[in-house]
Image (cartoon, rainbow, N blue to C red; front, side):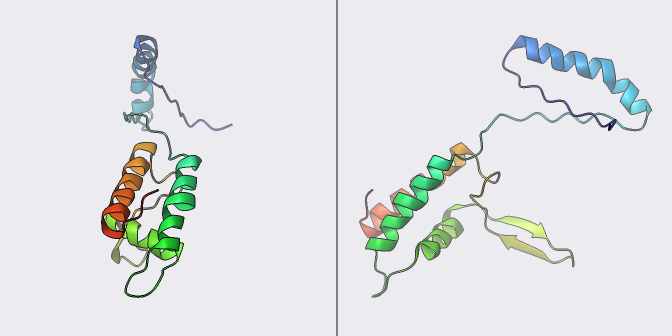
Length: 138
């Protein structure tokens, strides 16, 4: 059994907040004295993007664009359209490769990479673009 500590508290009211405070108060000094101070991270709860959001985005929005839109006399695949919109509307991020090179990559809509709110905003931006620039409504 591991001695590592991992506790999560969802602060939905005073009782869980009190439990968090009690846990920190009861354990912070002991862990710090052992050279393993506790780390407390506070963040708002955002659910991971939903499968139904992905189904709508790829199965309705991107499918409609790939089927209906022609650019300079040619059609493009769903993959091409998704890459286009992801590069245009998702914020880029910087990563460091093992050899030290720093590269800029586009954000992802994969599970664990984007929340419900951000996925909704991304989809709305794509919907607005396809309506105004290509006359496609879904």
